[in-house]
Image 1 (cartoon, rainbow, N blue to C red):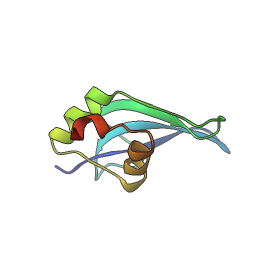
Image 2 (image 1 turned 90 degrees about the vertical axis):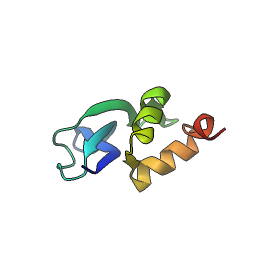
Image 3 (image 1 turned 120 degrees about the vertical axis):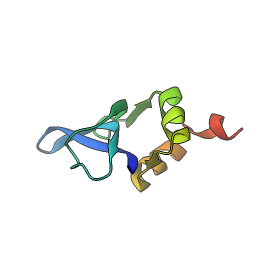
Image 4 (image 1 turned 30 degrees about the horizontal axis):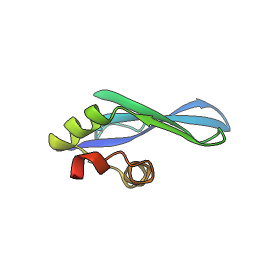
Length: 85
């Protein structure tokens, strides 16, 4: 089973916020997910990105791969920096 760490869109029209979830890659964007590890709100100033670093590290150790957008958010917010050291 291919597991991805990706964004799940929430909120109303033109006011999105996202939950960072671990899901099977074959499930739809807003469909079933395995675990919720954080959230991202691009509408606030400054943008809010909050994740549970321990959960993310465990899922990556177990083989989950972040999508390109989530990987960029991880790098911008130094989420995986502590794992590499």
